[in-house]
Length: 271
Image (cartoon, rainbow, N blue to C red; front, side):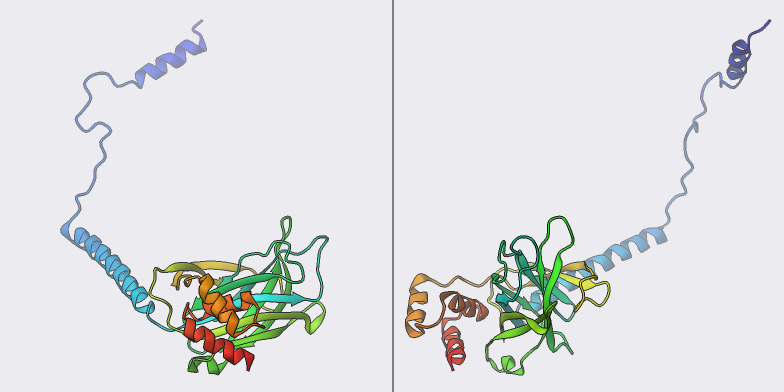
């Protein structure tokens, strides 16, 4: 009796092609690309190149525009939340732009950042939203305090504003402590550009800790200003003996490394 295996093998042999293979064996029929298709592809490539060039020229023009300079100096919080000292950082929003400072490890109730951000003014934007977070390792960062700061009109006349602002949080409105911020307005120094992340919230963010931020694109921003030399620092401190050294450095950075503007700003702070 013929086995099942033998019958299967016979059936498979009948399906085998025997002889020379035709020239078009396993060859796909590809329709030729006409000139109109090539033209459309070239036009699309030219359009992308033009858009890239336009964006590049726009960034070069933005280099010389005046910027809003915001320096987050330090904070004095009324309570340390958590089992250990907090690791605070600041997130601030100006219009559609969101920036963050570095984290102050173990900053606790007296964190210091001395971080300056520079952003282009946006039409209709007249305030700055500020939030302080505690950076956490095994859970979401906790929102500690927040406030909204009106952008002073005096800065557009060359005045530098340095002030402590009340913070709102779990302790109630304006009872979570204070934050020290310096605000000025001017042209950034003509050095190389650095990058800052521009972000957009997915839902109303401020005064609650449940919303998150989604990065949108990278926006060129002004670079770090030159550092204050020891000689200039000593000279300015001799003029303002009661002024803290870190405050002098922060005002210097807020004025884009201009020594004369720094002295004038410090005179305004003393007054």
